[in-house]
Image (tube, protein in one colour):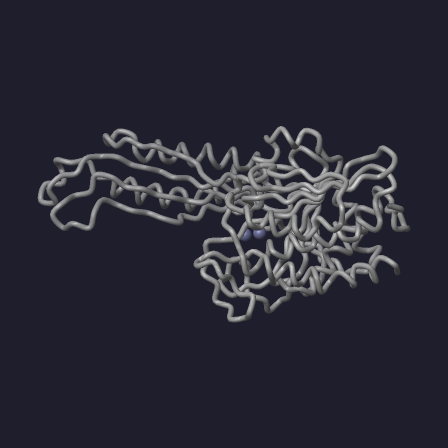
Length: 393
Ligand SMILES: [Zn+2]
Ligand SMILES: [Zn+2]
């Protein structure tokens, strides 16, 4: 097969690129050097158009066919995490307390591999847009891209993305129709009362008991009959009450919780109920409350047609498929794309014994670069027909 020979010839360079990115990670929204490394690497593949600085430090590489047709967008993420790496290999992160523990280095190398192959086999019709998206981990990058005026001319007919998934057999494709991963939202609750001498707590307004009630109520929200029809989860991640002083009864408190649901309607319902519980727990006791929201992710919902394309591609190239029954509990801002365009996300098994994502000793398996390119290539070929010959220059 001409394609697999061609892809294999690029693997040593792509592995080198992946390790270079791993060594030089950057946090969400700060991916300037990452974008430069990618541009340096892909410029030899002569995309027909390059869009820089989209949604921050994002990039779009465009490979165009000779006749009009649909736009197929492949999206990867660029950012690393604020985690100190515990690996000892030569390409370990050189940036203190920042590392690619989600494997986005591998996703970027796969898309660079797509650029390499597309430079030899441009689509016969339509175009392929390779989108490098910044700031996925904070849930901001996708909407920054979607709201960027430069995105207007790039709008896809289909969009696809993958994520490496530890805990699944190496190299298998993990698919699910419909809801692929959960929506999530960070809830911050501030309670404000009045401090008093600890000998006279009746002279103050303590948030202690309401705070305990809120924590209890939030944690049991998912089992409420109107909510438990679909998967949902509330995890209290932080709580603080007053100051550590034996002489003072507390006057303020803060609670933070992460809400997760299988779909966006369910999230709307969960949010409504969570707010009601906070109001009910603070009513009539003189406490003020403030609620704010952070890190909002839409649910990732795979479109039926896009899902079928992924499934067909995996079967066509003979990659084993694992079909999951439940959506993944984690969130991904790729859901912002699938809520607007026909899109699908799928997983690539990173090994059953692999450390989990965001563990301090994670490392994207280089063997998945070839698998990722092969399946993306098959999807693109299926929709746009790739030119079998190297185009004349
Ligand atoms: Zn992550
Ligand atoms: Zn990730």
